[in-house]
Length: 178
Image (cartoon, helix red, strand yellow):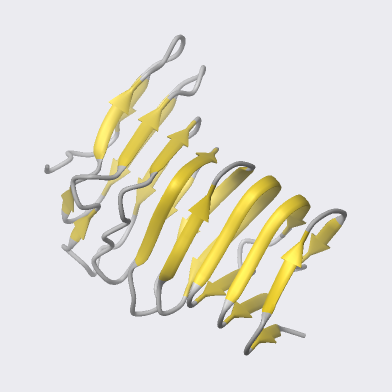
C-alpha cells in the first residue's frame, strides 16, 4: 500500500522506515533526523511536493518525483538519489552527501543553489528533453576516492562542477555542453 500524507508532517527520527518498493507522497513536510529509510527496489518513490528535510541518518535508493518542491539537507547521507519526472523543478538547498546522482527529469531542473558532495557517478538520461540541468549557482563536488563518471545525454549542463579528488579518476562518458 502506498502512503499519502495530505497535511501535517512525517518525521523519521530513529529506527528503519522500509518503503518496500512503495510510493510515499508528502504533500506538506517530510523530516528525516535519524535512523534510516531503505528502499530495496528502484521503483519506490518519495513524491516531495513541498518540503523534504534531512539532517542526519541515511536514505538508500530514493527517487524524488512530483510537482517539485524544496529538498534541504544539513547532514545525513543518501545512496543512489534520483531526481525524476513529474512536471516541476526540485530545488536543492543545503549541503548533500550523495553516492550516485541520477537525473531523469522531463522538465528543466533549476536545482537551486545547494551543494552536492558526490562520491560516485553523475548520470543525466533524458533523451526527450534538451533543457538546462542546473542554474549556474549550484555546486556539484566530485570527491570520490575511486573512479567516477559523468554522463550527460542531452541539454545544457550548468551546475558549477568542482573536482576535488585525492585518488581515482573522473571520466566524461559523453560530451558535456556548458
